[in-house]
Each structure stands twice: as C-alpha cells, then as structure tokens.
Image (tube, rainbow, N blue to C red; front, side):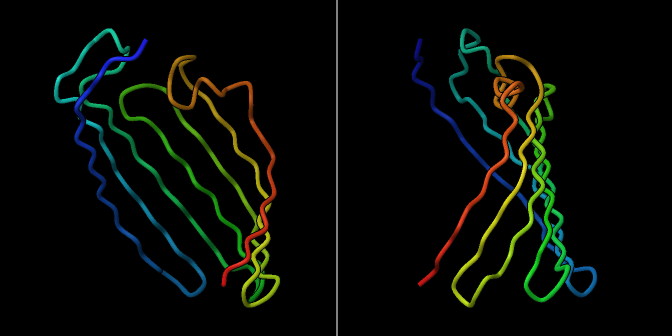
Amino acid sequence: GLVKQDTLDWVMGVEATPRDNWRLNGQIFQRVFMNHDAATGLKQFESGASLLVSHALTPTLDAEVLGISSLVRSDWMARAALIWKAGPNVRVKAGLDAFGGEALGLFGRYGKQDRVYAQVRYSF
C-alpha cells in the first residue's frame, strides 16, 4: 500500500489576545495532492481547521482547549489540558484527548483510543 504523491501543504492562522490572560488561535489548513490517486482513499483537497483557547487561571496555572476538525469528512480531535508552571523552566501538563470520525480517517482511526496523558517539560 504506498503510493508516491506530490503534495502542497499550506496553513493560514490568526492569533489574538482579546482580554488579559486569554489567548485564541485559529487556523485553516489544506493538503493538495498534485497527482491525486483516488486509490489512497483521500480527496485531492484535504482541508481542516483548528481552534485553540487558552486562559491563565492563576499566575502558575493555565487551562487550554484545542479542537481540530477535517472540513471534508467527519474526523475530529478535542484536547483539554491544564498546565502548571512549576518553575521558571519547568512545565507540567496533564490532559485528555478525544478522537472521532470515520474509521480510516486521520483521527477517526483512534476513535476507540481516547487517552489521558501527562508531560513534564524542562527548558534550558
């Protein structure tokens, strides 16, 4: 099953801080298959959109919600997370990812594998 494909990917986004401690980021994106082969099961133009909403609950605790969706099929992912700023260089993140959509889609294939995760990040 692999088919060589030439693609063009593009993304356009906007970010705003409408109020103190709030951040919004919206994006639309598309992958164009230049020599489209329908046998891949993909459309020639695969488009999607995302929206991230982030809010500082306290000086050391942020909450964020991210939604990503295909615009050409029913695939989607939703992510909710809390981020603790444990120190100047340390972030601890815990969250939940939920997936849905068509069984062979980008996110739908994980529809029965929603997950809870934790991450520790040290920046230097």
